[in-house]
Amino acid sequence: MAIQLRPVQALRLWQQVALHTVHNDAHDLTLRQMAILLTVYLDAPPHTVRGLAARLGVTKPVITRALDTMGAMKLVSRHRDENDRRNVLVRRTVEGALYVERFGDDIIASALQLPI
Amino acid sequence: MAIQLRPVQALRLWQQVALHTVHNDAHDLTLRQMAILLTVYLDAPPHTVRGLAARLGVTKPVITRALDTMGAMKLVSRHRDENDRRNVLVRRTVEGALYVERFGDDIIASALQLPI
DNA sequence: GGAAATCGTTTCGCTTCCGTTTCATTTTGT
DNA sequence: ACAAAATGAAACGGAAGCGAAACGATTTCC
Image (cartoon, rainbow over all chains, first blue to last red; front, side, top):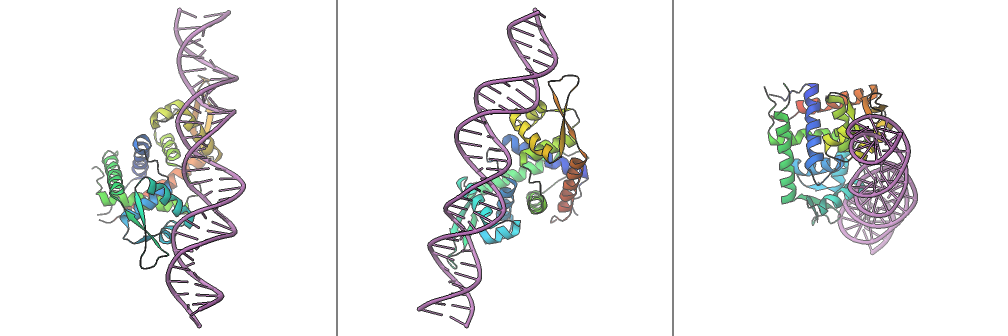
């Protein structure tokens, strides 16, 4: 059965997660960075810079910069593709998986407290 | 009945909305700005700079700057409190209400398409 | 083999956001 | 009346992101 949200529930959910993230999250990712992170962790690999740029509808430098930032945070890692050395493959990390998992828990907790 | 999400559903929902927003939204609000906007539109007024700062757990200049930005976008408006002229009251706008409404629709649409 | 295409990165100038501090205005308390 | 407190905005220096263009490294295509 599909997840059906009423408008106030949908907006409340987003508000609560946003408030919680602003309040407690040290990483302070932008929406673009979050979109990249979740795509790397939810979509099937491999993930290339070009592929991520296409998925988000942004230019490649946007991806490169986001990977710089999130790489320094150890949320993702970069590796040369040995089959085609022009490519860079973005891979998950233990820290990133933990971060994404906790973020999902926050969403679930907020959803449970939504008004009926 | 409460809204119950499984981890993959919660994360997929956030990913889809993030991707959609990055792709289509011209405003490009930060997470803090979004938290402020939704609080103004969902919580009961009046909304002061100090109150919003406390709600988000950030300093007042953060709120002031966010209101500058979102005021220029006409998503919120500022008015002196005539009862206590030290206060500034943040109010909703027609444009802002429309923006929030559309954002809610995006969340609902993404939720409907979640895997079971 | 060599030109062309592809891929990710770097550079450039610009804008925006950040935290901290300082300031002007207004209200409160005595 | 007047000092103290409270409120929001402005100033400051620093960090990070943006789009566009240019750049090396690698592969593809004749």
